[in-house]
Image (tube, rainbow, N blue to C red; front, side, top):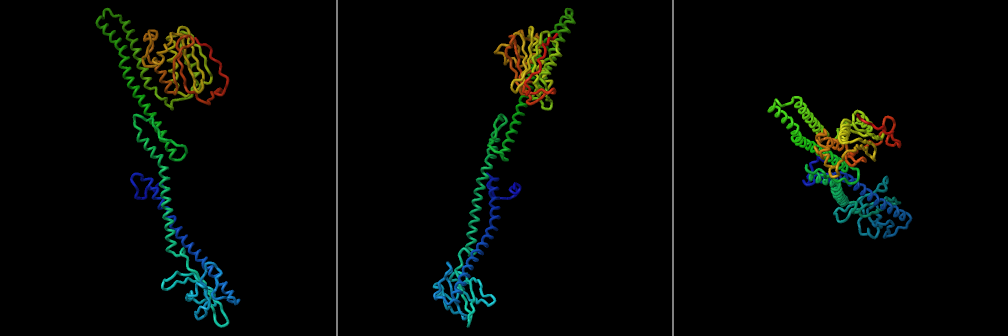
Length: 490
């Protein structure tokens, strides 16, 4: 159907070509279908009406024959069949010996004389001068003692059975049905194509600066509605790709700005040490110079490593994601560390997530490093489920984070007072890395106050629903695994 519409060279308006093509095509198909039906109907109607007319005239001649044989025939003859008003009895010489009132002044209704082998005949008789209508006539031969007699019964041919009139009526009906079908198709096609026009209008209004618009999706499940859903899904992917691209560009710009700013300090320190050694070689302690330069180089390398890691943390690559028992990961990473303060673990056994293992491990290590730098005597780590999320919290008993700084500290190279300064060993990018990893995995990270008065960092990551761990435990289990024993590093 669609190929036929495309190939038909139909003259259509340029503004709505598809709608007009559909309408013209349906109109042509309607004409092609109705024309043979109209011809067949004309033939059947003419045959039916003619057959009915001759049936009635035959009935009349039989009634007249019965009255003639019984000697009850009157003159004028009284027709007994409604609609058959022309009745004549004609002798062998063609003389009318009896007739109905309407046929008394007429010549014999037909000149045909039925034969003994075919005593009854149906005829159509038309006047030679076309002064009157044609008639349907039945003739019946009645053989008498001296000569045969013919009974004629006729009626004017119905105007409906005249080929020209009937064909005109049927042609008018075909034309009317075609027009109504075309009008209905035009309206129906307009209603069907209206959502497509809405989709086109919406797509025309979308530009690269704002991809948030979506095409309308009415209720239903037809092809056009599925097309609208597909277009919206495509727009979602395009918008997501644009966001990812913008995030990558932003990371590149941030990397350039941060590198040019933060790398100057250790480079300036190295330069100052070397220049001072050059100016005062006799007063320079070589071992102290080398140790100081190596310290600056190590800090420089740490900053570069963290900046490069940040550029790689994007929307987590599905190909690298795997199911991870977050409680077991926290237990393993904690056991692998040496910590000068006590680390208390409270681990839930039903904490399965889908994530990139090395990134999640890096986020937890950064939180532990941050807590270890500021804790006095204790660090508390808790892993639990909360609704559809797994929650990891790391708290300490250090100086804490002021409430007005709890969002700001996640920015790059953000540092508080001297208690959380450069000389404590951080690059200023650890918490930024934690935030970006959490967001890339569909989670969040916040900071509040721990129960010991210090800072408490809380990471929420989506829980994998319906997953059972290898030992059979799953989200539906009510019991938790036993909490890990307190861990003390060092």
